[in-house]
Length: 585
Image (cartoon, rainbow, N blue to C red):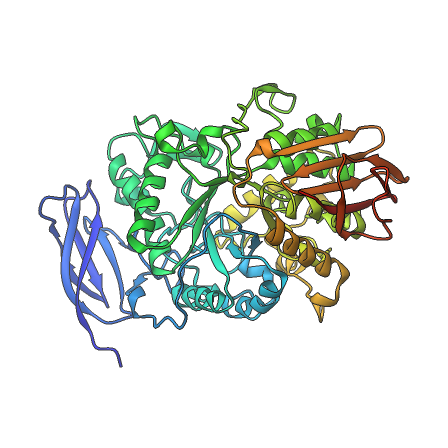
């Protein structure tokens, strides 16, 4: 039995005239903290698991905004949790971004059990595949049992149905035992609508800015220094206490901040300092809709200093080329998809100041190709967003077939960018991944359901065709249907071979300028020189003969029946085929 010990309980509540700690049912008056405006403090004996909360001005007892554990969900009391009590089994020196191959997974659907423990049982599969980092979708508490996790309301805690904070520690420890790093998706741009008590404690939100979710997080108004510290403290706590290697930051373009120093620059400086203190590499990956190189440019050069950002333009170009889809934001890419793919491979962004028909205005800025490491962009053929935000949640293998899914893997895994796979992609999973929720508030559940139907009705879908997010069957359909032996599926072996080629031949310091591309829009073939590799893609339904440059080529991988390179410097490519070749120095 773990004995009780004296603990410090603190909370920021600058508007309150009186704050009471309720610990295991006992009220205890708190005192203003010396030298810390708006902070309240109390000291009391408590053991692990002891329930507690705070009452402001004799109001209802609310959970701690910095709760590390919420065993009864976001509306219940916090529980004392000591992250330092876990006995780590594996030493970990960290795995940085250079050379990384990311694997995005959602704990609740990676297995039907939907827990950290069940997901850990699949880690040997990922280690054999060759990925370097597991990237977990958000794990902070949210209402109900099942959901995507982007409506979390407690940025310091871990969703209890997944296994809670100790479950996350055990998962990370198991990953380290297989040589895998762990990255966590975190949401700083908003909190979910249900169970969000932060406005009762202080000015965590502001009406000075508006986001798709309503009022913005207060990053630049009165009280904002404490709000910024709240989010940065959460990020550092996850990196430290759960031995994570990095964080993926959701939709940073909605972190609206007019401060002299942007929140992202402050966060990246804190993470870099933390990495130096811990003596192991840490990195931040942004999701951004701005196509702005400043997101990943060093702080000393005027940038915000994040280490990488997702590249949706590369995804859109690749998707349009493989599927022919041209609706919505695919329209700009579908007009000349081979040209769009070539531009993203060599320049990073397709929209780098060009007109975006989807937005109705010019969009983005170009990179300095010579000075920009290609690893600062994350490249992918599928993500939770690009699959799950479709009306029916279809994956690429379901839309275009496994043959074209194999072609997509070549520029993703042997291309210049930091590659990322979405769970199940490696064996061509065709189970849908749909939008699902478990809101406990009936009015909120109805609003989400109706909003989803209205959104897709505008694109021609009948209401009855749109899966009900609240129906448990929607989550069940979205669970991976694992093959008995994934490694025996030919697509799994193909992905594994491409990762091996990447590890063996692609240097970590490739610049965007180290990539050159030739293509034929009508012939639907593309030839990309990426460092020492040549990637040949024939997306057409007819054979293609492609002229290659002088020098000998060694074939490293081919999808099927591709003859060896011809002596006159020509590649003969069957329909819908790909080759990866090594050029002689």
